[in-house]
Length: 168
Image (cartoon, rainbow, N blue to C red; front, side):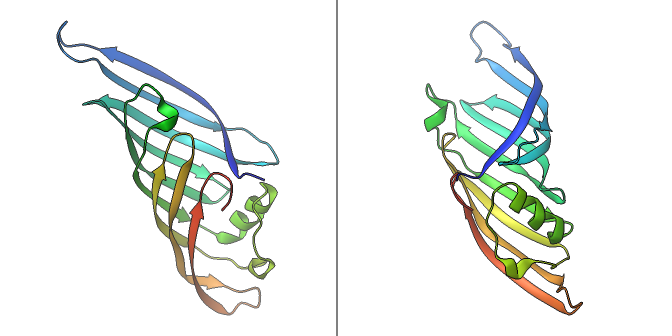
């Protein structure tokens, strides 16, 4: 089953034109409020968007899976069909404790190895978003050198991940 995210979006859009001949300037800001569904990853946070030089730029900061923060920027060209617009941008993932994230991911339908049961500790990832608005792809590496196994033994780990809208 696809891994999808769920949130209510609320915001404000401002349109401005410095003169009749000047290009339209659009800015927007808002909040994402989690939408609880068993088959979705709940997301909440904030975002700001602006249209400049025929490109959209978005800065976002969201919490997901109980103990993770994902933040970064993304950009894409303004187009007649936004679903086909190619997007790009960095995404940082900060996980305060992988234990609650693993449990929340499973509740959201993400299949993770049982070898992760009972593992705790922080992790961080530097990821990249690309693809299109219709099919976003997120890829990169998440790592930690401060994990603890269920036995209390210290552990390190790294994972190369790819999220393509259908799988993680």
